[in-house]
Every structure is written in C-alpha cells, then in structure tokens.
Amino acid sequence: MNTEQLIARVRSILLTPKTEWPVIASEADTPAGLFTRYILILSAIPPVAGFLKHSLIGISAPFIGTVRIGIGAGLTAALVQYAFGLVAVYIVALIVNALAPTFGGQKDWMQALKTTAYAFTASWIASAFVIVPALGWLLALAGGVYAIYLLYLGLPATMRGPSDKAAGYTAVTVISTIVLSIVLGVVVNRISGITGMGGMDSSRSATLQINSGNGSTTIDANSTLGTLGAMAKSMQASSQKLQAAQQSGDPAAQNKAAGEVVGGLFGAGEAVEALSPEQLKPFVPDTLDGLPRSNYSVERNTALGLQVAQAQATYRDTAGAHSVDLQIVDMGGAKGLAAFAGWAVQKSERETDTGYERVYQDGSRMIHEEWNSQSHSGTYDLVLAQRFTVKLHSTGLSMDDLKGLAGSLNLSGLEALKSSGVKPG
Image (tube, rainbow, N blue to C red):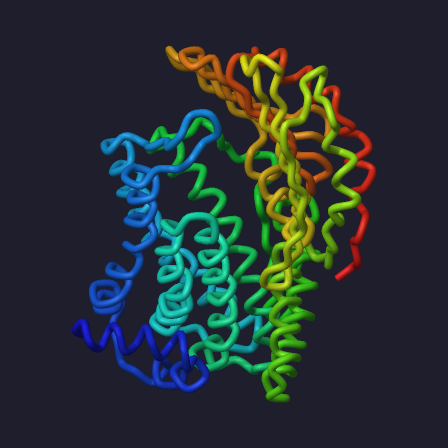
C-alpha cells in the first residue's frame, strides 16, 4: 500500500464505511503487512500530536502563561505512547477475535486485526486536532466516537456475525478497550515520568465471563467492568436505535440516535441534562473568604449529544497581591468520565525539589493537590459525586489557604444536585 493507496483507504473508511468494510473483509493480507503499511504509520499521529502540543506549542496556564514539557521528557512520553499504542491495537484485536463466537461470529485473527486497525483510523486521524486551541479536544473526542461507529459497522462484515448482535459485540469490545486504555495510560505516565497521578487499584480487577453456549456475557459485579455494566446495556440499546435510524435514512433520526450512543458511553449509562446557568450561578459567590469577585461567566453547551455546564470566576484583593481562579464544571452527559477518574486513580503521591503532587480519596470525594514552592502557586481540585469538578488555582496563597477557600464554597449543596437532570438510559 503506497501513499496514494493509504490516503484512499483512509478517505474511504471515514466517508463511505458501509461500502468499504466488505472490501476490507475480502482482502487478503498478513499481520506484518497490515502493521507496516498502515498501523505503524497512522498510530504515530497521536504521540506526534501530543509531543507538538505539550513540548513545542505548550499549554496555557493561569498566572503562569504557556507551559511546556521539556523536549527530552516529551520525546520519551511520545515514544512510550507509540509503543503502548501498538500493543493496544494487538490486544484489542485479540479481544475482538475472542468475543466473535459469543456474538455469532467466526474467529479469524487476520480479520480481527483488520477490524481493529481500520476502526481505530478515525481516532488516530482526529487526534491531530489536539494541537488546535480550545476546540481541539472536542474534535479528538468526536474521532473517538466515530471510531466506535466504524467498529459497529465493521464487525458483521469482517467477523461474519449477525447484524442484530453487532451492538452488543461493539459495546463489550468498547468497554474492554476503555479499561485497557486506562491501564496503559497509567503505565505510560509512570514510565514517562510526566505526571505522578495514576495507579490502578488492584482490588478492582476486571473479570469478564463469557458463556459461548447461549451467547450471553456475564460481567463480574465486583470488578471495574461490573461498574461499567450499565453503560454496556445503555450503549447496546442506543446502538440498536442507531441501526434503525440508519435504515430509515432520516438525518434527524440518525443524529439523535448517534447522540444517544455517545450519551450511553460517556454518561455512565444515563442521559443527563447539565445544570442550567441559573442553577450553577449560586455556587459562584460574590466574595470568596473576603476576596471580591472581579469577573465571572456561567454557560451550558451541547455537543455530540452531551451537555456540559461550566462556571468560572476570578477573585482579587484591592491591592492585587492575591488572586484566585475558580472553575466549577458539571460533566453532565459526560459524567462517566469523572467516574473513570475515580476508578483509575485511587491514591498517588510525588515530591520533588520544587513541590509535590497528591491524589487521594476523602470519603466519596477525589482530591488532587499540586504545589510549586518556587512560584508559590498551588492547585486544589475536587471531584464531587462522580459528576462535578471544582478547581481553585492561586499564586501567593498557601495550600491551606486554598483548602480553606474550597471549604467556604457550598460543596455539599452542589453534591446534593448529583441527580438533577438524570434520566435512566
């Protein structure tokens, strides 16, 4: 496959997947050939884009300006990410192949590898958008969602399973991939040394029990996959609606069904309407422990069928010696991401010559502290009710001061709204 053929395949799988998947299924190929001509090339996009974003372009941070990771650390992270990305493709292909009989398909290692590689194409391509300011993460997320849709379309053609079981096949594969991604992400962070956050709780190991006789899938209720079980059921139902919408040819119905698939995956099995600006505004007080509010904004946005609400404010003293940035986010339709954080990160602690970073649980709350003694700046983050995030950042105040400011907020009142707008999937 030369460059023109590579581009043509990418274009076809992204724009006309329904007609391209049967072509892919009928092609003779080898694992080595697919890796060298396709996977090794496209899977390099995420680590390269990440290196450009974090080490060359940089990330804007309040009070500090543009923050960049050192070139050496950035290259190390990129190489480790690239290597583990290739491992992920291989493992997901094994999962696809192993699950085939459970959902009425036929085991075929080459077809499973093709399924994984070409479904991943959307996510690989979209990852390049992380270098785009502001909306880059949203475009990258859209690529990941489209990759799920590609997988859903491809499984019946490549693994020769019935179309009516494609939704369940897709859901279980996606959940397994998410758990795998969490584990690999933690390992990458540990090896690259960029962040001290991470660490899977061994008590939450994932167990998937497959009964090939009747095609049922049993998920251990005490495992991480057990916690994700509701998401699988919701996504399966939503995927069936998506299939019906595709057959109807109605664009409006297709968009609505696609949004339900996204909500089923990122909403922890529930459809969630984020808090309105009027509901969020009371949690942004006029003064914060004596510091007057200099500016604020409250908004709610909808994208890809997900609603997210956010409030931001800055508090400064009259002399301008102290200021605090406050951010409150209602993950809303994407509250499953907050749940992922709670499952993946249980406890972590790192100290350096210039400060420390800690992640820990305080009851039902997950807390992240980060302190830089050189700049005398700190960040105090909380994840509340597996839905809301509260972040305070300041230069010139101590960590105890930040904790005190957080304590002056109506956090319990925010937690009490955890069920607001929630509709069972």
